[in-house]
Image (tube, rainbow, N blue to C red; front, side):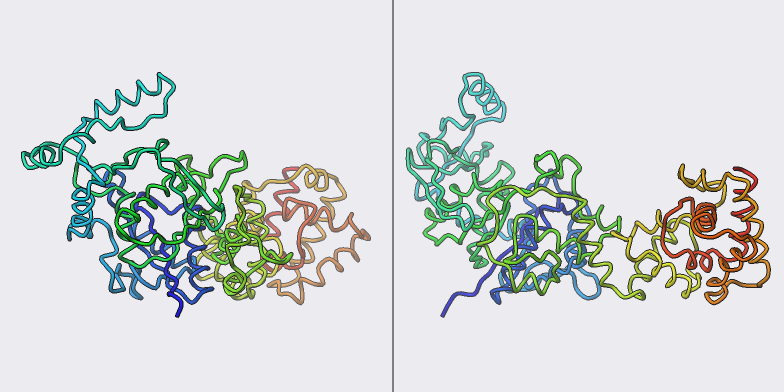
Amino acid sequence: MSKEIRVRFAPSPTGYLHIGGLRTALFNYLYARKNNGKMLLRIEDTDRTRYVEGALENLLETLKWAGIEIDEGVKLSDDGKIIEVGDKGPYIQSQRVKEGIYNKYIEKLIEEDKAYPCFCSQERLDNLRKQQKADGLMPKYDGLCRSIPKEEALERIRNGEAHTIRLKLPANEDIEFEDAIKGKISINTKDMDDQVLIKSDGFPTYHFAVIVDDHLMGITHVIRGDEWISSTPKHVYLYKAMGWDAPKFVHLPTVLNKDRKKYSKRNGDGMVEDFREEGYLPEGLINYLALLGWAPDSEEEIFSIKDLIEQFDFDRISKTGAVFDVEKLKWVDGHHIRNLSDEELSKKIKPYCIKAGFFDENYSNDKLLLLTDTWKSAIEKLSDIETLARSYYVDDKDMKWTDEAVEAISTQKAKELFDIFIKVVESTDEIDMEFAKTIMKQVQKESGIKGKDLWFPIRAALTGNVHGPELVNAFVIMGKEKMKERLLYVKNNF
């Protein structure tokens, strides 16, 4: 019987979730679902200097928004509380430290001479690195404390001397592992450092805690960004030192910005929260992120999460970095927006319209649906409505007209046309769709003007542009008084 697939997403609560992190979570999720496995969420918070209050809550809420379901570990309950589900917890590393989970494993390594206490001060280490850099050498620990007899080192620890615990790597040994994407990777220990496993504050480092936790939680596949490749030999050696089987390693290509540099949280790039605020649909963002470094076995580019699960595999993941293209994201998101019904989309754009000051909660649902129908084909993210629909609601003094529009509205003939238009709309109490469809025919009949000479000035005056969607819809949305005010303003100011 084959072993159950168990994968994990193990972020640190150091701020809002980054696009690269969400893609890593997504690829773990897709692989687990494709193979009827389990997706775990573990929180790696042992670096207390970088801990950000509220980051965990944001992470969990963001994953829930994105549709990435957590089977085991830390998750949000139906009523929004942080809970832990599963029998291999705690799933928050600081809690695991408090329970002393890592102690027996570090003691085993020291006892077997595979790790050793290091008493070097930070000042000495800093000076060592500076000198090594000046000499053109790779900065690494020089092994000063490796030769301290074990009993002497333990006595110094009992006396309260500050120390860390370091991994004791063998000399000049090739450490090999097979990566599902990169293939066979080999690194010699002479090019590696005696990694710190336990920090001076007693907390385990990432490199130690991650292998203990992955082993105890039964993780079968470690799927993470390829920035961790250089650390993987240390992890492989630690598994060997502990007498454990290592999981399979899958290192994903780096997400790059348009300059082909890492799309980095440190550079302020790509926080998921920003994309949410701009109104990208979770379906659109997830669809696009799946295409960052992975290619389907077809020409298709628009996928539901169900489609992605069915098609996902490691064989079609690229070895090279993937450029995050916002324009392509918009294109993908636009397709998902157009898959929504008008009713669904109207509910989603309403908060953006209210935020822009177009109307309040009590706005006519019929007009909102008409607004949705008018702009649905042009919306690529929900916040686009704030720009697209602006001319229907903004004060006349705050309107903007394109150069083409100004040319169309500045003639004497255009101003005469506006007078006729106002006269026509004055003939009704309220502009409904039936009346709106007759307005331009009446204006044409009275003015004798037709074609673009008729439509351009009216459209330009009301919307600020000579091109755009169905103008009849604008007549109903703007209404009689708004259109009269706009046309009189244009007539008097251009």
